Image 1: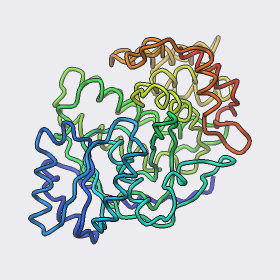
Image 2: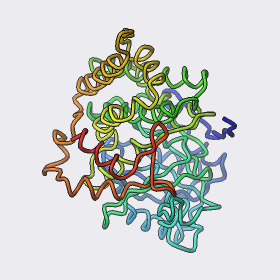
Image 3: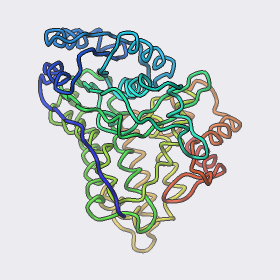
Length: 400
């Protein structure tokens, strides 16, 4: 496929690089900065105060806004927009993971916009209602490897009053820099590390799995390298949560998996993400944990529409011996191995077993979620197979 590729984020990786935050903000023209975080561990452990003090020494004006939650809320973005306008903020710094970064991106777009920032996330006929043409600059101090939002063009928000989770893709919200010290991820709970790893893998899976003839050799291998790196490092971190090399590799994989690199020249899918967004929007499920249930179900539902690619993944990534008598068994064995990998990380591969869901997921709820999935203008999603509402319900049933 013809393609364009843009990934301008300046990546700063290594020990103690968070001490350079103020200097990097100044390099990108920031003087009055909103520091955005979740008020949780990053604040309690002293990281936020350490970075804020560094910024003040650099002569920067700092305003803090905490309170970010998983599946970040639109209401907090509204609050941030008002603060930035009042304080004449010209730069937004996110300290944390994908939720803080996505919320910061929403604020950055909303400040110069006269209308409702939700216009950039809401859709009409498969397209956003409005497309932002300017935004404040965003920088990141990353504390969890997962979403890849630190270098991506994407932001995802939840309109909490409607349990509606929607995304915005726009190159103007790519962060200008991302500071990544792997040591800042040492104290992450095992569940967050595991969920993050699944999210990283899924970003390249969405780009890797597509229709016949929709890929190319170089990005096949790039995607497969992300998958294998994540799985190897996940096993290392189960036993040694402070393994610097594994933490660093996962951080870099997070960035490369969602900055567009692994999708160059490919027809992409994104069905699993769109389906899981409704699950986490409805039940406030951690995104990566939800994907651990949705991905295998989706694979079982669509693999026959591109057996060649699924066989390549099965043998080259999941190390399944090719079954010449019945190749289908090769793919099914690979999917089972993927489920076992997720289970080995103490993640559920069935919606009904997820600790975050305390009620029965009923048929009518699955139907409601399926109807809400953001689709294209033709009412379908997916690259391997075009999925309509009934297909999506069937995938929810397989995942349940």
